[in-house]
Length: 296
Image (cartoon, rainbow, N blue to C red; front, side, top):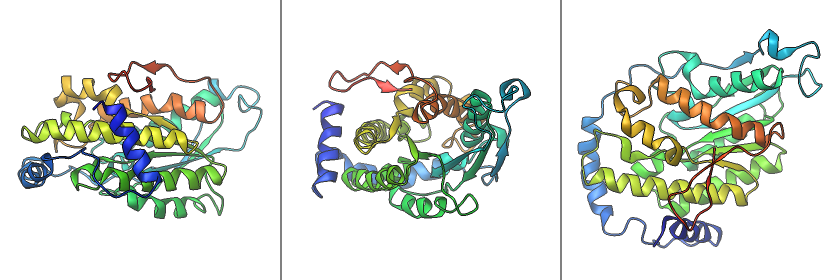
């Protein structure tokens, strides 16, 4: 069964309330759970807690220009980052290296408009936890909600063996709620957990399959709910796998500053597209003929 077919079955199961297994874990579930403790012992502790990056990010003088913004308005964009430790930027060396700040600064530079950023990502969050972050985001900007939200989530669902149908059901609820609020939504889908070197084989191969399939299902569900999706694992997985010492932080699990900068750079074009500021981003070739190319 192709990844695209598995993703479609997961999304269908989520939409119609199905709770049964679709064969994604299969006989690997017992092995996944049995080796999780070993993997966690091999993964170190993060060097730091996440940085506080909330604030207003101004465009450069060149970007601002004489008109104060390329869209003719001067009020700041309101950007909220939701999700897990990836959204929070755990493991980055500097605040400016976190994906939230990379996207905020990139949006300000591209539009000539200031960007107010609120990061509500929580270390350890699963997709089922994100709706509470949505509720906080709705009043995070002096009582107002965001113009655009980036959601980075999924890895903890895989490592805690959350059924993919349940994970996708939660994500659909989040995206639909934000879209109904009139917000542009970009989901940065589950990263490729097969690139985490401390995880032993065959668990690492299982992790790659689970994370990449969940990411495909997240992307499909997000698009159906009116959002925009970026499959980080499909795009950046080869880079992380090729240079793990550069792309992972000292704990060998969370991204490094370089890994986070690349994530933010990959997310930014889809944020601009979601806001109607640029055309669709280029598409990365899909490794699954049953699925369309990946948004970048």
